[in-house]
Picture: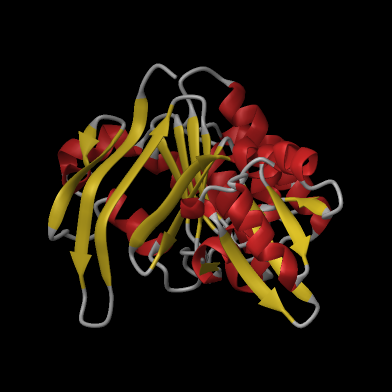
Length: 296
């Protein structure tokens, strides 16, 4: 990684019922960073703060080396040319036709590639004569993605960009995103509730809860190294006493049928406890155990 395309340190924003509290977030060249959390955890607020859409109350942040608070000024226009953004709701006037959207963007971005936009909309099955109002949510997200990918951006910031897409369409979009980030000097910050998409494409997973970052880990550490031990109640004390799982990392969830225990190294665990089944960890599993699991 040769540089940070997004850098936030201590980012803070206070509202009456919610606050971002000292958010640290980095997205490096060549990375896809998955940004996860429950509804209302602060994902969209963080993204909007990074884009300079409102003033913050503390900390610093920058996009492509330019402070976020400059992005809303004329001096930030050149940087915004290099950022493709998709929000979780389509933000285009409903009366516009798909073809009209392309013509408006062509006058907005100096780097706009009209032929690429037409190819993308055709590949996505978007009818150029349909209005934004006539598009389903999934088709609206495809239109937003076509716009984000058609002006030679270096950085994509995607807020639930695969929401509303059927599985085949999500596969198509993930392939496009892989191709995008394979080019030198590019990166993606991608928030999503569909963590199976992030398991396929992300390099790193950052989780926010109640306005605070609770973990920032390489995706492969979660999905390839960690595991979930499916224990009986009697097994928990045995595991704790063994030291195989450090006390600071021993998190568990009780169920009617037993206890799920977070295992930092499932291979080492199996050697010590071959009689206890251990499943591969998913991003959803790890987030649930981190946010809701008990600590011994």
